[in-house]
Length: 305
Image 1 (cartoon, rainbow, N blue to C red):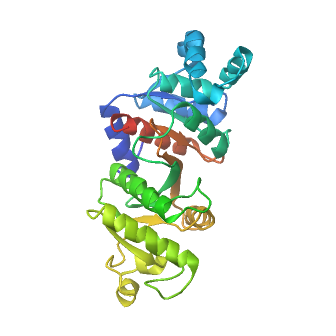
Image 2: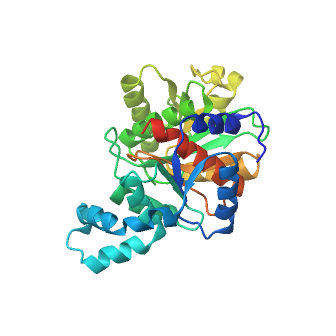
Image 3: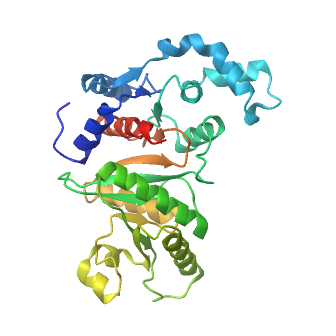
């Protein structure tokens, strides 16, 4: 597949420098089939089910030692492994594959539940969250929106953690330093509300823990993205934010879909943050190009997770 000289092209090229074994468990979906052909044309390594089918007994033994199978019968574990997503995640845990991408048919909750059970959380976080990498229609610039798919009402501590994970992801995919805006309906105390206080505290926690990452909050979206408004509202960001941390799942999910469908951005994700190994979700309305891009992102993360 011919690609522009863009963010997508850059991370595809970088991912190919460190070959990774990619597994896509929804191999019966027509979009996945087409994406697999395109990924192979780009020289990615795609693992098929028949290549890991022989490992059933090994995988059965692996999940028998997991907490979630406590008191499960042997038949229950065998039925669990009949699900292609679960089987692929056990293959990932066993290092037979390096990354996994699903969600063309599975819901986000299904992908997350099995991922947390099987591969578990990273040692560096207490929460799983998600980001969307939003690429402009001309592919010249990109933003990261978080958390758009996992935590409905994040606490201040969770918002700080989400911001750190999203910052790392943005730097990895864009090659640019993250500039973080903790978004609210208030800027610098212009409104007094418990939701504003939550965002203010998240900003305080983050700025103290990660002083090397430029950030501001609480701040309204226009002040985060428009330099003249940013100055009027006394933000240090000068309208240059590229990582947007939303106060809740409602606002984040709505915002990324508006940006995608009205502004024409490509929305890659939900890119899952906080797992010990690279697993990413797809929108069930995903296109072949989205699948290819998210698979490349997962492959790129092999060397850092």
